[in-house]
Amino acid sequence: MLEVSLHKESDTTRLAELCKQLNTEFVQVDDRVGLVTPRVICMIINEAYYTVEEGTATREDIDLAMKLGTNYPYGPFEWAKKIGLRNVYEVLSAVYEDTKDERYKICPLLKEEYLFNRN
Image (cartoon, rainbow, N blue to C red; front, side, top):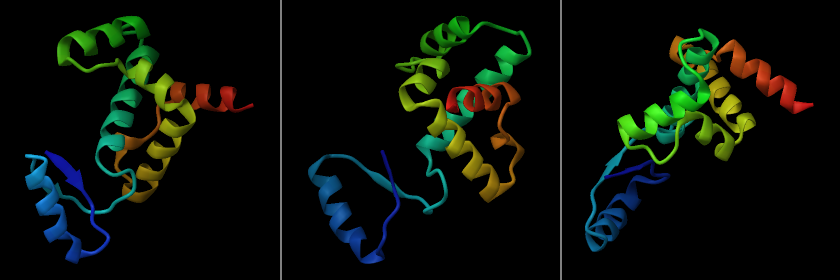
């Protein structure tokens, strides 16, 4: 299932044809800050930072648990390293600014590491 945001509604027909050729389906989502997948991954990373900050688990344990428990290819801290902490911070910041939803409020530990590594 592909999540797509279209610039023009007239592109829906062409997209449907293409997806049929690829033997896949699509669902149209609103064009919002952070889109869908980046929001979810960055929110998981943020929650992992809260977990470390609270002393509940280590980064390594969290990465291992997420890979084994959810079959994700990477744990949250591995994702953060691949994506780049700056990008994670900026997605969360933009989504929080757009939604004011507390789920996207940046963990103080993540913010501290972002600011420290920025210099």
